Structure formats: structure tokens, C-alpha cells
Image (tube, rainbow over the protein chains, first blue to last red):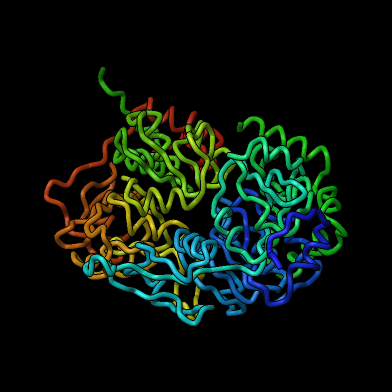
Length: 308
Length: 268
């Protein structure tokens, strides 16, 4: 039977996470820093308590930190963990320092090349970076072997590093537009997500808007990802909040700062945040209401308009 | 017209302005979060109007009205000729060899220009975990001119970094060649609030080339975990002009995201 389906894939976040995320899964994380992190899907994974997860991506940000803070992550395989000017991802930092979580470091290009190999169905890929760095000396590897340095077979003097392909079990990505069968449009910067989505065994997409398939057929040169790689489409307005979605709303400095304050403090303060904003919210819409509802989002939409 | 120099600046502002002076018009520069972004946008608004920016998150040649909050700030794609992907920028431009200048920063920078942004202590039982490489390793491996901006503290400038996230000259003049890096002898320039240091490709070590106004060589040595050689013609960093400070404060960083309110501050 074909693995590719053109059937309607629209479902709720709860249904999508129940169906595609499992204990021990390798999860591909979309989004970068303060942009388009799949926070709605992340909250749902936390509420369902899917555990022993490996998170992979390039810039693992607040969505990763939430999953780590919830105690659901055994390992990260990534380029960077952090929130830029908002500071460290504190739960991630503490989990590594206290040896509660394993970190397998790469750099951004190496990670995206691993996804590139994964999406093309080839087993490994060469990169020019990493040589001479301690990223190679510290060899924790989910694959058993992190890298191999070889001479270019066509130019023996030249060295390259081979790294293994990465095909996450399931990726979670928030985008601007999708249709019911899983065609996807990412607007603005696309980061590592085109490669990540195509490399993943399954992908859950949450989107600001569901549009008709004719939208894609009439703008076919701007389709980011065709339906073949997408398994669930979750319509969720503000699904990246408190991070931004280009063209829709800016990131919420106040909420991210508040999260950072709680994540840095840890203990009871962090528990209170998680209870109030994740566990006690039945759906992501409840969370959005708690964070200020329409008034807040009108403001963030206006902020985005000023940037465009 | 004669330049109107100003003494009404702080050290952080002059550090950024000095770093920007290493950017020439028509250079292709990969932007990084933080003060590098401020320095690069300042260069574009002053002496290097034709500079080309690329950003790891996928933004190609944006026109940035002010310094964005991070490399993934939604404003990062403003007026770009293309908002593409990470692979297009780090792979098809940086690794491919089409980028002239990269900015790096980290927790530690050593005498060989190696940078640590990963761990303090053994990775197996770390004392402190930092964010990790991000795009930095790729940039340090492939770009011919690396600019580093850092506040100058002894703990930030050890003789050897505890973890090489982004290789400089590794352990000496031939360190990069031995490791197999194609870009064997990049320029590495470190601008701090005390001085400017540059790698001498013959020794693979940082040399002191300029000191900030009002700073002494001894003060640099006191705050450095190694003893950089002095370049023969040691210079003083040129003061900023009034116009430069105005542009920096009012246009590049109007909300003081990066540089704290500084208009009335005297140099220290």
C-alpha cells in the first residue's frame, strides 16, 4: 500500500498527538528561536505525557524547554538550545548540568544536512565543518557512531566529515497555511523545516489558516511542502504563541520573559507556570484566553503589521 | 569636512563602532544575534551602504530598519530579496564560500582564536552548559574573515578554551591545515571594550593591535589569561564622531535592546 495519502487529514491537536506521537519517539522540532515554534502541539504532548522523547532540530527553543521542564525528554540532538536575547533555555541547561538529559551536539548546517540526507533517502552526507572542533571529540551518538572523517575519493588531500542521515519519527511544525490534505505554505524564513518535514516518517502540521487545495494549485510555485509528507493538519490560530508567526502576529516579549523567569527559578515557581498555563488548560484556546485573549492578539497582530 | 569627534560615549558603543570599521562596502556578511547585528547594521547606515547581509535562518539581503531581536525575529526578512532556508544560507552561501565576513561570540576565546560556546567543565559532567554551536562552527570553518565582539574579562580570555566549539587556529599556525579545514588561514579579529586583537597567521596567535582610548597595555594584560604579543605599530582606537553616535543610538538600536541608555554616560 502506498505510504502517501491524499485523504483529508484535518484533526484536533489531541487526536493528532494521540495518533502519531509515542513514548520513546524521536521528535523533529520546527521553529527557530522566537519564530513559529509549534507551541500548541507541544502543550498537547505535555498534557498527554508522552515520555522518553528525543528532540531534534537546529535551534531548539521554548517548545523544547517546555518538554524538558515537563520531564519528558531523555535526549536532544541539535545545533543550539537557547532563546537569543531572552537568555538560555534554563530547563534544558539545568537538565544537562544535572545529568538528567543527554545532549548530542552538532552545528546547524550539520543538522540540516542530516535532514537533507534523510529526505533524499541516502544514508549519510559529507560536511566541511566540525573538523578540529571538540564537537567531534565528544562522541555520544544515537546512531552508535557520530561521524567518520574521510578523504575525498576524487581529491585525496581534501578531508570531509561524514554524518548519518536523520529521519525523525514525527515532526511538529507550525505554519501559516495548509490545506485539508496537507499541502503547506511557510511564509517568511523557512529555517530548517523544508528538510526536516520531508525527512520525517510522519509530520503533524498546525496552521493559522486552512485554505483550499485550489489555493496551492493556483500558486504551485510557492508550495513549500506537498501533501506527501504530512499526516495531520491541525487548525490552530496563534498556534506558535508566545513565539511569532510571520505575517500574522509578533512574539510576546512579556510572556516569554515571564516564562524565562519561571524556568530560571525552577522548583515551585516553574510548577505553578506549568500547572496554570499547560496542565489546567484543556485546549490551547484556553491558554490563549488566559494570556490575554483578543485584546492581546490584536496588539501582537498590529506589531506584526508594523514590521511588514 | 573635519570630523567632529565625541568623548560622550561608553565603551560598549565604541566597541561596536570599532568592530563595524572592519566591514567594507560590498562585503557579504552573515549576521549573528547580539552586538554583531548592531555593528553590521551601523556599518550599513554609515560607511558601508552597499554591504550585503545574509542570516542563518534564511533571510537573504534584507534591509533592516533597526537591529532585530534575534536571527529569527520576524523583522529579519524585511525587504529581503529572498526569505529562504537555513540550508540555503549556511550551506549554499557560507559552506560554498560566498560569504566574506562572519561574526562569532562565546563564553571563552583563547590565544589561538578558538571559541567555546558549549561547556565549562568536562562534557560528561559539565559545570556550565551554554547554548552550543548554532551556525558558529560552520562559519568559523568556512568564512575568510571572522570578527568577534566580547567584553574583556580574564575568565573570557583563557590561554586555552575548555571546549572548542568553533575552531580558530586550534593549536598553532598550521592547526587548521592539520585538522583538514580548507580555509587554512582566516583573518580573526577580536574587538573588546579594552582593545583590538588580531591573529598573526605566522604564529597562529592573537596579537594586540590597538587599545581603546584611555586604556593601557597593562590593563589589557591584567584582564587576559595569556600574554598577546604587541604589534610594532600599536595604535589607539579612533574616537567615534558625534554623527556616528547619533545614528547608533537613534536609528540602529532605538529601543536600547542592545546598548543601554547611554546618551549622558561618560567613558570610563
